[in-house]
Length: 126
Image 1 (cartoon, rainbow, N blue to C red):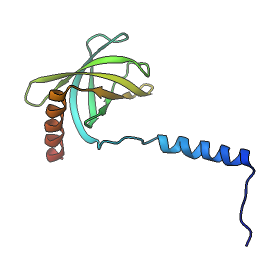
Image 2 (cartoon, rainbow, N blue to C red):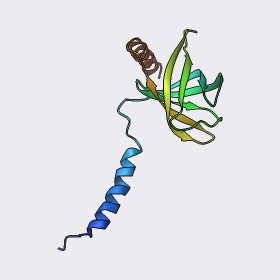
Image 3 (cartoon, rainbow, N blue to C red):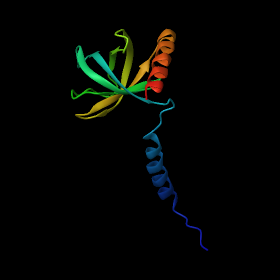
Image 4 (cartoon, helix red, strand yellow):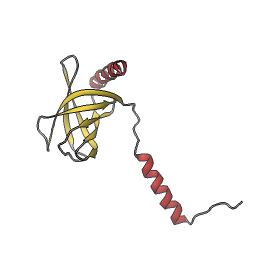
């Protein structure tokens, strides 16, 4: 049997394709389905209403028709089922035009503890 060998430039080309595929799901935290109302404030939106549809300790997905930019910093006010709210800072990591966007949280230690409790609640609710 012959071993299939590619020239060096082809190996680099293939590795760049497959490396990019691996980046598609590079999350290290587990996400859980939720349905939480949020209010967003950033350079491009002011007190915009949206909904968060999945949540993890490090981030979540927000459905919103208004376009935001990747890298945009924002404050996210998450309305909780207990009628309380949690405000966290985040940064947009990717955008689905006309659909929503992914956000990565920048949490304090107390916010992390609270978020863990919220995730545990979401896990039990499913």
